[in-house]
Amino acid sequence: MRVAPLAGLALGLATTLFCAPLPAEIFRVATFNLENYLDHPTEARPQAKSPEARIKVCESIRALKPDVIALQEIGGVSALLELRAALQAGGLEFPYWEHVAGFDTNTHVAVLSRLPIVGRRPHTNDNFVLDGRRFRVSRGFAEVDIRVNPDFRFTLIAAHLKSRREIPEADQAELRLEEARQLREKVDAVLAARPDANLVVLGDFNDSPNSPSTRAVIGRGRFKLVDTRPAERNGDSGLAARRGWEPRTVTWTHYYGVDDTYSRIDYLLLSPNLARCWRKAETYVLALPNWGLASDHRPLVAAFETETP
Image 1 (cartoon, rainbow, N blue to C red):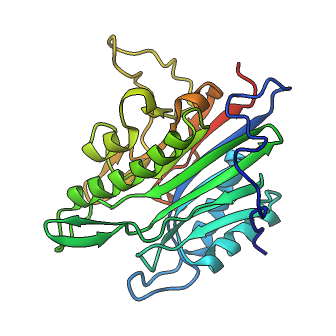
Image 2: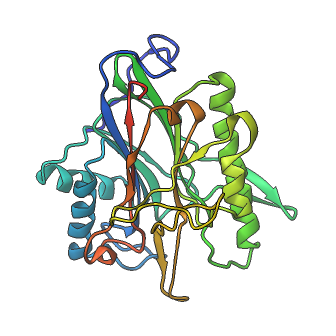
């Protein structure tokens, strides 16, 4: 049964926007594109997720031990609840959940949470005009407020931007950029209302870190988001080959079989204030044997401490 938001709860009351000076509490936030986690076929996607793939999805999520996980390419509510029940049977309980159905009627974004969801603002009808035609953001955005403890909350916005698959209606990169701008509007709205908000923006952005669409989400200036850039925990030292470059750690999150390529297109981005609570050493891309049985994506997780380190 879905746990409803607490009625009448004002976000400003008892919200500590800076990291709480009380005893530290660690929590983990993850994101995972499940690659067509459908519990029944649809006209557009004629295959349900196989039992073997579902088992591997659960194994992957259990390995992360997240307190909150954003999901992309989940089917309807029944598929989400089936996954939630399977995780519970394996000892990982998520009493709270959010499912957002956008223009795409096949796959959606969702959130599972061990921590109370105390605010919900689903975005299901955002639209824009491109080359004289109006388009809707295909999967919408999930926006929830989550209470870690009485003195610490954060806002999570989950997204799944337009894929790189070409379509006849418009250029796929231009569509993705417009969706990214819509997403950034949601980020700006949160930070305009609460400049020191604890905010995580995460999901499948379907493009590289330097692409116009990803840069649009990250933003610039005072409210530029921090890219956590998770990498495999494989023993690499994390040394950069050149000043100003990122370390040569293994950060890919998606395998594209048509081109036989691996790329980083899934992200965990943080507001400047939440970045103060980020535990970089406990942030990583999950690497498991036979990872591809679960999905063509690999999940990411980041850890946070409610007391500033």
